[in-house]
View 1 (cartoon, rainbow, N blue to C red):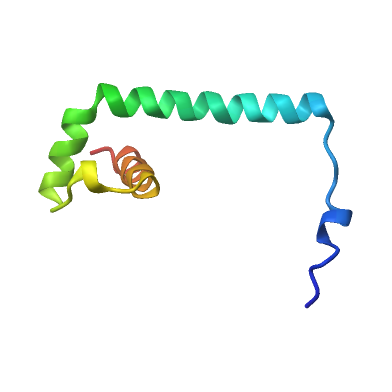
View 2: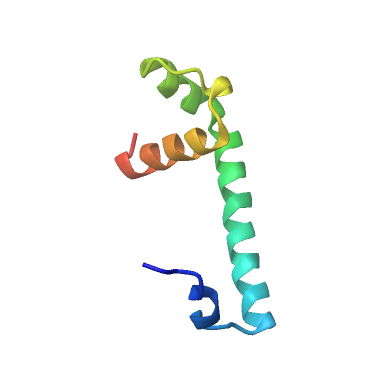
Length: 74
């Protein structure tokens, strides 16, 4: 399967729509950062229970852990 032309077929969004989408994504990341900082002690405790060291996790692993905690209601 040749995907060399997929960008040419992708719908374009306006600069205003692109800015709005980026602002929403950035706002979501900022809220996640605040959530993690406010609850860092609890998150580190959950990590210890799972045999993990939160300070040694890469960013993607931290995000995955926080997502799992949020969806599990832990």
